Image (cartoon, rainbow, N blue to C red; front, side, top):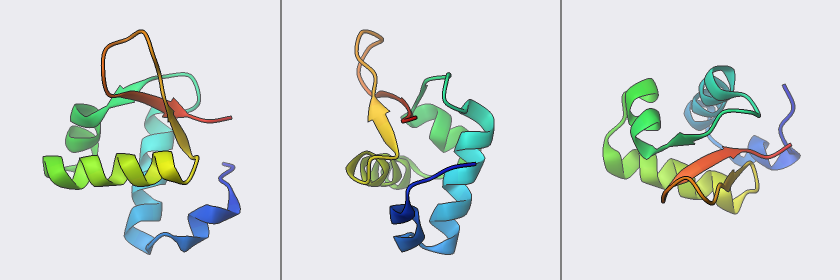
Length: 75
């Protein structure tokens, strides 16, 4: 699995979350906050924070045309 070097700045826990999300969704499937909450058993605020961190570090990108708050991993 490939992630930019930037992912080494994340905590171990965050890195595990990223890997679990990638294993489930890969490059082709979209996901949103509710999927993150369900998969990682997080609270809403934690899921939102994780998603915004991943967008800022260029690991995931917002997907348009499928409603608000859908993302997928950047290739």
